[in-house]
Length: 239
Image 1: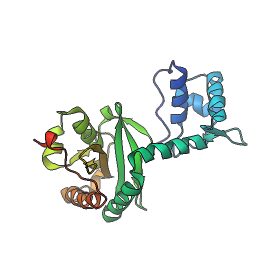
Image 2: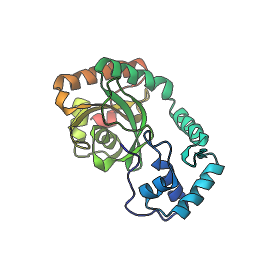
Image 3: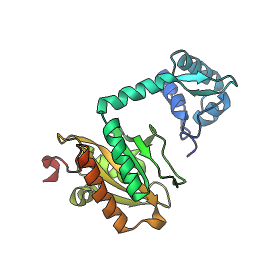
Image 4: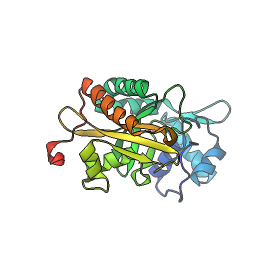
């Protein structure tokens, strides 16, 4: 994936423009020049330059010696604060790592934010997939994918595939968001029954099998339970 998708319209609010600039950074776009921002945001260079200077002063971007810009240290602080509110990092990372190790597939954990899903954690096997999602990247729920169906099931109610999620405890999609890719997602609940998000395993459709989906369900249930999580919904949703 090459950075954030180019907005169809130029954002009107100052705060929104600043956020669009920050979301232009990606794992494969860590050093961007003024022209790069202009090409990817549809904003004029004078506006972008003013935004970048403000973001630089507050530590959200760093200006490099060659004139390019990179994410600043303030983002790391906010990321740490966000993760600490969930107390997930120390518990979820081992779960994801073990599932990745046993399946040799890419594993990620998503939460819902408004009408998007956000990747909080991800681990890829050594032979990684050619497609990946940056940690922190927002993806519209409307674009689909198995994690979107899980997130919508437990935040909206009777969505199109909610019955399937509730009946079998997981959901599978094939090429729904990206052609050639399949994914299996399970819901993740805290020990008190509160819904946290969706754990997703992604594979190439060419190597997907029903046995893999069954294995993901079984391994996920065991590893999540070992860290105090659950894959079972609250009783109000399961009846």
